[in-house]
Each structure stands twice: as structure tokens, then as C-alpha cells.
Amino acid sequence: MIRLLMVLLLLPGLAFAGPVRIKDLVEFDGVRGNDLVGYGLVVGLNGTGDGIRNTPYTEEIMANLLERLGVNVTGEDFRPKNVAAVFVTAALPPFARSGGRIDVTVSAIGDAKSLLGGTLVMTPLNGADGEIYAVAQGTIIAGGIMAEGEAARVVQGVPTAGVIPSGARVEREVEFDFTSITALRLGLRAPDFTTASRIEDAINREFGSRIATMMDAGTVSLDIGRARMASPAHVIGRLENILVEPETRARVVVDQRSGTIVMGADVRISRVAVAQGNLTLRVEEAPLAIQPNPFSAGETVVVPRSTAGIEKAPGTGLAEITEGANLSDVVAGLNALGVAPHDMIDILKSINAAGALHAELLVQ
Image (cartoon, rainbow, N blue to C red; front, side, top):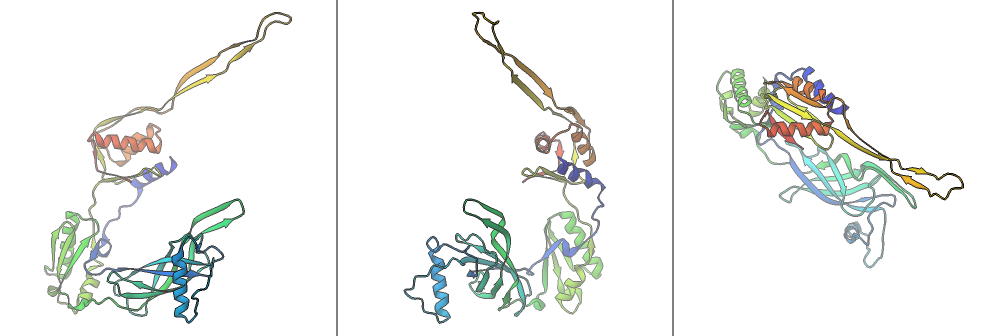
């Protein structure tokens, strides 16, 4: 409950974001990265590699690699435990040039127990078109640790996945002639008509001519030719730092797994009454054995003795939220009931079902 109260109570005291740079609100059409993927081998593991019996493809690629290096292993029966087959993934950033370095992620696909301390052997990375755009190789930094004994095993994190910072070198560039474009679209990360209109007005004021046109809630079109600048890159460099105050929808985000609730400052709730009760029924059995008098012919008798009661948690009851209550009023009213985080989530769902919550409710 501490986490919930901190998230909700600290928000009203935070300073509003105010104006934000256009570069933080939009994506530039055509300026995007490309995903790369490859299949390779990790060697040098301390006995935590793939079991060749369970993953025969590891032995096949190992044999092919050795044959390309001039080592003939035809007919040989080798079962190394320090080799693991992996998938290698990376993102080729926009405007990446040949010789540049990018980060890669390495993930085991067999039954390897850990990639800690392993080295990725030269692995080509292909794009969606099947062409090789980068080659990865290097020492893996695993994201976990594992310790194992004869009868016990402990694992922390995910030792079967890791990263290689700057582990791939770009070999092929994505052809994109940015200087030849005459029109460009700005895509809003959070589509909103008000924000798009403000971006349009701010750009037109900055350049002194109508080069920006709002197409819809998520798109603003730019006519690069009207900007009268040397190149489209100069236009983008000038407009991406223009400040615009974004408009956001009232929203309540609920994470049921952690019990975290985040409310925007624009959330409003109509007049509604909330009752939250937490009754505990307790029944205890304490049977009493009654012994007969000495030297008598009586028998021992067990007399049942039960105690039953109902307890009500303190602070529960009926709370009323007035018309147009803001975030602080909602938090104060619900906290006055002494509710737990998951009970708070149920209350917000019920308020939304009753039509009294004037915000978008997102449950994760």
C-alpha cells in the first residue's frame, strides 16, 4: 500500500511538463531504424553450453564452421559442452554508415544453462530483405548468474541472454537520399487534434510561412520547398527544437500485478458514493476435557467450546466524492477508507462501470 499512496499523492505536487520540444512529440516519416537478426555460436562457456544430444543443430553448425576454417571433422564424434547456439538481434539506426558500431542482443535457443563468459563467433546479421547489413562478434555480458551443486541449483536473473555493447560493425548502408525529399510528414507518438494543431501553428510562426499543414490527429505534413533553406536536414534541425505544449487525455493506468495506480491531473469523477467493507469472520474451537472424580466410575467427557466473532477493519465505510472532484479529492476520499491497493483497483473499475469516471481507464 505504501507504493500506491506514494504514486498517487506525489503526482499533484509535481510540476507540469509545460512546453516540450517537437522532436520529443513526433516521429519523422522515413527516419527510422531497421531490425536485424542472425544465427550463430557462442563458445568458451564453462560447461554450461547446449547438450548435443538435445540440440543436434548445434553440432551441425559447429562442424560447418570448423570446415570453413580448414578443420576436417567429418566422421568425428565430438560433443563439446562449452558451445551454445544463439539468435543475435540488433537494430540498425537511421543514417548508420559503414564502419559504425551497434549494440547486439544474444539469446540462447537450445538447452544451454548460461552464456556467462562466452564469446560470440562472427555472425552475419540480415535484414528483412535477406541482405547482410552488419557482422557481430565479441564477449557477451550476461544478465544473470547461476550456481549449481549436486542437489541444488539457484538462478538469479536470466543467464541465457546477454548483450554485446558495440558488438556489431555496420557493413552495408540503407540507401535513403534525404536531400531529395520535398515533403515530409510528422507522426505524433500520441495522436491528438489539439497537439497537432499547436505543432502546425508553432512551425508556421517559426518559419514565417505556411509550410506545415495538419492532416489529422496524428499527422502534420511539411512542404520543405517553402522553407527556403539549404536542405531538408536544415529544416528538420531548426523545427525539432521548437517548443509546443502538448495536450493529453485524462487517463487512469492500473497495473494489477504490482498494485500500482497512476492518475493524470485532469481526471474528474462525478458525484458518487463508495462503500468499501472488509469483514472478517473468525471461529475458534477450544474443546474442554472434564475428568471424573477420583475413584469414581465416571468417564472422561469432552465438552465442545467455540468462539465466534465478526471484526470490521478500521476506516471502512461509505465515502462520498463530490461533483467534479479532482485527483487529490479522489485520493483523499479513497485513502480515508483505508483500502488496500487491489481494493482500490476494484473501486476504480466499479466507478468507471457506473459512468462516473470521466477518464480513460487502462488496466494492464
